[in-house]
Each structure stands twice: as C-alpha cells, then as structure tokens.
Image (tube, rainbow, N blue to C red; front, side, top):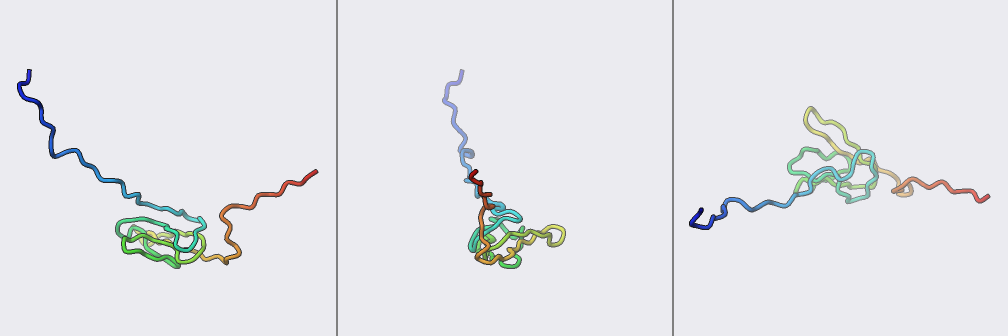
Amino acid sequence: MAHKKGMGSTRNGRDSHSKRLGVKSHDGELVTTGSIIVRQRGTKVLPGENVGRGRDDTLFALVDGYVSFERQGKRKKRVSVRPVETGDLRMTEPVAEMSAG
C-alpha cells in the first residue's frame, strides 16, 4: 500500500480549441460578396478571379456569384467566383405553384 498520495503529472492536461478550418462554400454554391469560401493556414487553395485573400489566408468572395474550384498544378487548387447579375440571385430553387382545382 502506498504511503504517499500519488501526484498528477504537470506535463499533461491542456488542449487547444479547434480552429474550424476548411471549405465553407463548395463548388457550384451561390455566394454573396464577402462570403467566406475557405478558411486555411497557408495557401493550400489559391485565390482566383473575384476572390480575395485575408491576412490569415482566408479566401472570400469579391462579387455575388457561383463558386468554382479548379486544379492548379499537382498539389494546389484555385477557387474563383463566376459572377451573376443581381436579378438572378436566388438562394433556393423556385417552388412549383400548385393549381387550385
């Protein structure tokens, strides 16, 4: 039987919060100006047309439009936003009207 109380290790017992990185808007998705497309560390995904890059390498839309990913070499990808006219912005498909009768 132990004559002294066990002591917990001081080298353990901490963990960091997850950073919630990754793709936030996928290929073909409709985004509005300022929408975050990718949160990343470093430039795994490069900014293309109508896409800006923040100080922390976050990619965001500069115009309203549809997200488009394409390969850039062997290891990288490039994301662009294909612009749409403001009258065409629909977040969901229109629901077919039911006829009364």
